[in-house]
Image (cartoon, rainbow, N blue to C red):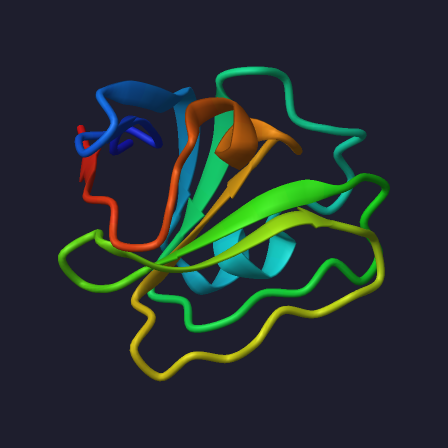
Length: 118
């Protein structure tokens, strides 16, 4: 079974966004997303790809959403998306990184920052 976990580093800011980020790269893993979870612990996250937009219908908690292009450069950010909402569909987006609420603010992550996935 392929490795389902990655680390995500904000290279621009020199900070880790997630040490244990799960990859959601198949139809079923993207469809399930974070459904059924009660939250994300610090250092956890979900990287959905390919993905142009997300929603929080059926979710139990807020989360930060970071939209990325194919080069993993940040093109859009939603801080603290509450349950039962949707984010925009962006044609430029290739992936969306979902993180615990407050992660973006705590790391000063911003549009234009370059992320490294390892």
